Length: 387
Image (cartoon, rainbow, N blue to C red):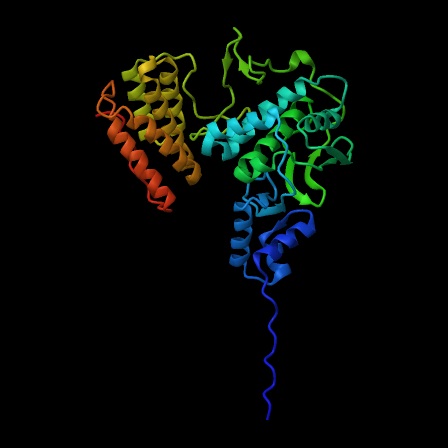
């Protein structure tokens, strides 16, 4: 009796098929979308998608940048290398300098808002908030198109049909989209429109990314009521003498709070401390669990330090920022900053002034960075800055 032929199993779905699926869709797909369409386990799908991102064939971005939770990644195929531009080159340099800080939501939003206000201010005229935002996005190369224009209080939807910064999105997915979400809010704020509801959804559909916000009508902030800009074009609060100041209330970890809400007092920007006083105050703040405020003290010391000491104080300020990110839950960014701080401080081992324990502080920062990368959640005692 002849044996019946073995039943044929479905052809396996390989990485190339996953790439083809994302390309055919046009818009962005989440890992869950790909798993549902291919029948593959979620872990296998994520391995394929991350491998394609690593190969430069896909880019990924959060499905809904700007929201308080961490939404799923959304993946999109790269058709071609994006064209470089002066803005793209500058942004790449900014991201490189900021390192892990760039992905921090507050940092990216603040940078983007300043940038958006500057770009909108350079295009002042009689345009309403929607047209003003479209001009800013068009100047950045996003080829925006108004899909739905709402009346005051209604939702307006703008589609971004091109992204000329896909290479940067691939290397800095969270930072890029958060910065550009901030640019959108900054441009709207400059126009006097509500900016607190503005949301950027990367790779939302086949047309590209989508911006949604409530239209605020044509009213614009009168020029004499706008905050003055500093030499870089960034909007700053200023005192009666015209000196820049930080009036935005902040919590104990330096996160901005709404105006009018009592915050934790920060170090006055015009205070001058001796090195010994700065170290004592920074240590007190670190011991109290206020590394952001310790960073402000150390940054002030860095800015007034003599040239031979500047990199040491800069490293100490970076260390405090790394500890701040650690306290905020951004372990990846914290580890990167701590390593950069450790490298700077280590260069002063054996010769650090003001009784600074450069070798011990560098070793502490390196050990904490190693633990964070290994997922160790145990709390560590505060660093000791001096011998």
